[in-house]
Length: 393
Image (cartoon, rainbow, N blue to C red; front, side):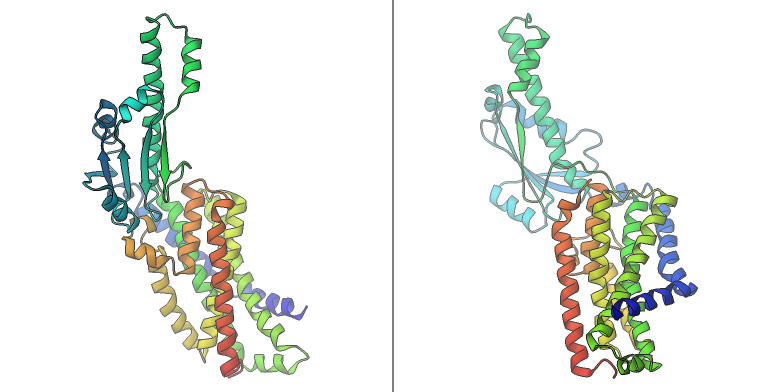
C-alpha cells in the first residue's frame, strides 16, 4: 500500500540524518548515564519516608510487637514514618487522598485469634504509592507468617510436653496460617528499591520519545514548505493514504528510537527492563500514543520552526509531569495525579512496574489501554484540525 511507502521514506530520512539520530538516541543515553551515576546511592536518602498510619485495638501482646519491634527494626525504620491514628475512617480517607502511604489496623482480639489458629491484619494502601512503600504489606505478611509458625510451635510443645516429633510440628504448621488482607492499591508482588540507572533509562527514553514525534511533525511541515506534500496530493493517491502514511512514519520512527534506547541501555548499562513481552507491548503503545501528539503538533503549526518551538513547549512540561525529571514515587500526590494525564507518565509508570515490581503484560493492561486510547484521541483531534484548515495550508 502507498501509506507504507510513505512511512518507509520518512524512516529512511531519519536514519540518514546523523544529527537527528545523535539527538534522539544518543542524548537520552548520555543523560541516562550522567543521572544514573549522579544519583547512585543517594535515592534512599533523598526519597521521603512513607507515612504509615496505624491503629492497634488488640489487648494482647502480638499486636504491639508489629509496631514496637517489626516496623521499627533496622532496614525498615529508615523508610517508614509511623503515626498512630485516632479514627480509622479518617486514616482510610487520608490514604485515599494520598496524604498517607498506608494504614495498618490490628483488630480487637487479634492475639486471642492467633492462639485459636486464625487472625487478620488489615493493610490499606495508596493506589499511587511509591515502589518502596509497596514493601509495607510484605513486612506485615512476613510478620504474620512468622507469628503463625511460632504460635503453633508453642502450642504443640506445650500440649505435648516437648515430646512432639518434628513431623507433627510441620503438619500443624501446614494447617494454620495467618495472613494480611491487602486492600486498595497494594499487591503481593515482590518490589525492589529503584536503581537510578534503570529508572532514568526509562525516564529519558520516554521523554525523548516525545522529542522524536515532535521531530516527525517538523518533517511533515518541512515537506509542506518545500511543496513536496503538494506534489504527493497531486499524485494518484488518496488523502487518507497520505495522512496515514505520515502518521505511520512517525509511529515507526518512535518505535525504533525507543527500542534503540532499550537495547543499548540493557547491553551497555545493564538495565533490567523486565518481562520482554510487556516491554514490547508497552513500547509499541507508548509510541502510538506519542505519535498522536506529534500529529497534533503538526496540525497546530504552520511552519517547521513553529513546530519545533511548539514541540519544545509541549515536551518539557510533559517530561516534568510524567516523571522523567523527578521520580514518580518521590512526587507529591497532586503531581502523581497530574501525571495520569500524560502519555509519558503512563508509559514510564508501566516500565517502572516491569522493572521494580516484576510485573507482566497482564499487569500493564490498564496502561496499554490508556495509551492506545490517548493515541486514538490525538489522531481524531489532529484530523479535525487538518480538515478545518487543510493539510496543505
